[in-house]
Image (cartoon, rainbow, N blue to C red; front, top):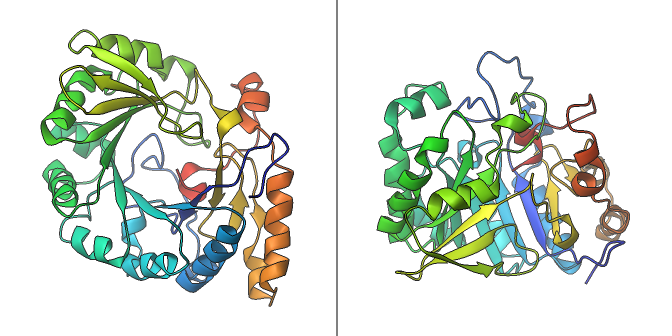
Length: 331
């Protein structure tokens, strides 16, 4: 198994299949912002992605998560899942805003998808429309969540990015929504990714505060992380087997156990969500490089990997440094 300078193995790959999205949420792709989306010819093809996955599997990757942008806006995504499944990776997951999910969960599962995560920042219908900056129906997202559970894409996970002054009044509501439906909830601290989301530290609701709110209603037992490399610190409700987790990237970064690498839609490799630049792998791929040559590039990238956030970025909050937008590198 390939390891970096700190002995961390390469196990997880996140693949962004598009930088486009059907929403314009202010914390990712704010409305009114001019965004130069990638030309379609610059996107990796599904066959190119599958080839990279196969090479990364030989280096230790066992889990692949498909992200975006919004991955379901890319046509025939089921075909990519089939191709990735054929590489022999053990676990294929998908992160989505859920709006295009109704009617697709069964096909996604039969193609090889095992798990799904849906972003759900609010349960208030008008707030949801305001957030998406579209005339959209929150009911479609809820329908997609419930369908995914029926189709066996378990565990169905819900991600809620908590932002002070926007949705921090819904922590208990979302927790109860997930408890009632047997969903695994993960609260996420608002992260300073990219340049467009207007991030400031005072908008972050710290993990300890989220936990304090939850404990006003529920008795929780800390159960830790499912695996040392997992991002979520988990707690079990006293009256059910369900867990709730908190991803505290800002107040309690977990870089030292991170085993994730990211592949952007235009074929760049990133070793951290907070990286300022990626390593181009599309060009050698399209210029006839062999699998061994691609593997050598990936080995070099991983073995020279840095702890961007905990060692560097925490000291640079508020300073003007290069950033890559989340919708380009994948969440």
